[in-house]
Length: 371
Image 1 (tube, rainbow, N blue to C red):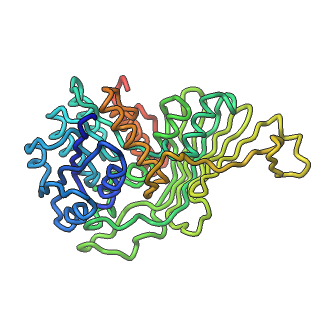
Image 2 (cartoon, one colour):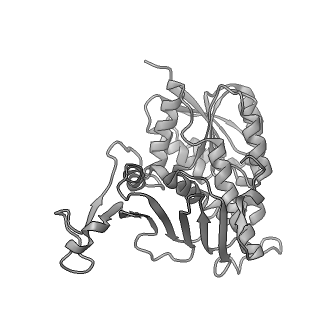
Image 3 (cartoon, helix red, strand yellow):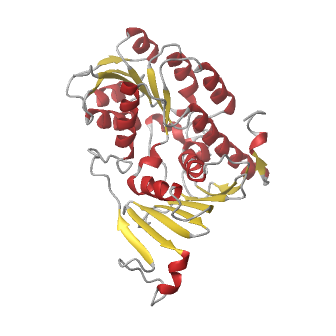
């Protein structure tokens, strides 16, 4: 039997504990070390484990202890650069939470620092692994809608969750909502379209959330609503519609892909996939009719029965961890690279600049030449 993969968790807040729950469900994986400067977070992570891990109050001591084959970094966004620079000095495999960093300069530094390592670095953009989204991508890349011209992603949800010390209330810590929250979606747009964006136009603001909060006299400055249009070299476009004061949505995540031959929609949390082709439109007896016979629009629920832990991401984190562990054992490259993580951050930064300056922003303004 293969030796177990020993994991170290750096950052054991809510997302770090989510990673622990997923790792526990995968055969041949064990958490051996936890590092967090918050004692309550360390103990909360330890309480989830069937076999106690060694605890550290900083990542330096965890790295020096040499207890791990793989690291999961789930610290606050603005600390990613410091922690990852130190972790890259080893050849340990790394799963780094999104966003990669809050600044382009830091992302570029990490991409350079990772070159030549034997250990892989995987950026945790797990949205592509949500079952109906995975099926949507498979069908799209298989030609189900023909040439893709539009991708639309709507997330209407509740406000940001509380974090330790409420660090996520300020742009200086998060990189801004369109980096912290929606870099997932920008990465998904690139994946669906198989292109890299060239320009961004956005409008957004802080309209409702956190306006009555104060932290040492500072009011939170994270936006809570936005529209973002992303343009691609082929002429295809993607749209993000974000509202974080829309708790009563039935399906709070709605992804639509439209091509010259058809349309696919993925809805969460209902796990619904809707698909129809343009040449079927005239076969409907009633406007909007759906039919299991193949006429009109087909509607089905999509689930992956191999998922052992649903968690907070519809099983996507579990699927990602299974793939991460498999890549470690087989010596494979990461499915989501540092370069992808950098580009997702760049789109978010361009969107914030577009909002601030009320203009279209080219990605060439955010990324150096050659990117």
